[in-house]
Length: 306
Image (cartoon, helix red, strand yellow):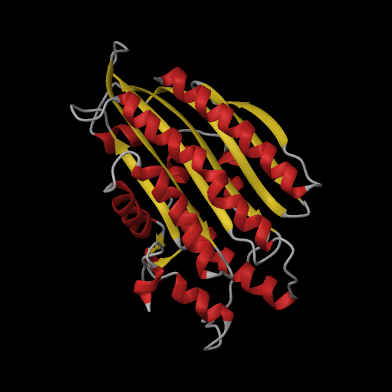
């Protein structure tokens, strides 16, 4: 399973980077190979200063070794070794009308001190963080992942959408959402009902849905004219993105606590962000509408939302 998942994420990285370079038309990805002290490493690709993408990263990693004590305490184990592999991406477009996007698909194995596999699980998902939004674009993003999930059970999308709505929030800001969500799942373990191959197929389906969910929105919005005021709002909302990633994101914290490569871990941060004291958008504005979109809602059956 480990080898299958590693092959999947590396192929997906190639596919996504190629598609992004094509739609940008100017910038290309810089690739860095890095090694982790203690075992493993990764392949980070970063794009910057493009026609469409101001900054973004698509990284794969395969790390292994002794489980750090802080993680061993979290999992309730001792004298354990681990292997974690995954793909993680964050893309910050230049145009404020193009949403920021995040996706992550990962696989984890835990071994005893003799090297015997004693636990494994899958995790992942994708979510959209717009600054300005047409409702039907939010619906397209959610519907694409619903279709990917439905092949494995119609109960999965509602469950993992709810997980996403509950996870990507700034708890220190009265549970304000980072974006409009998507799907998020974690700790999917093989059991009597679903084998590791079943869960791998589910992860692949969602990974392969990513470009279908995001690229049509980019194509539609990348050439919309914008003003300095639009960019200012984008930078303000990006500040909320930074707050979540540095305070609450489990992937960021895991990477830092396991001696991951800091440059790759923090590549998710935007190039420009701003903070303003007690700022509120003008009532009735596009910015105020975005704040309403951030509240958990049914993006599939929009007519039920009034």
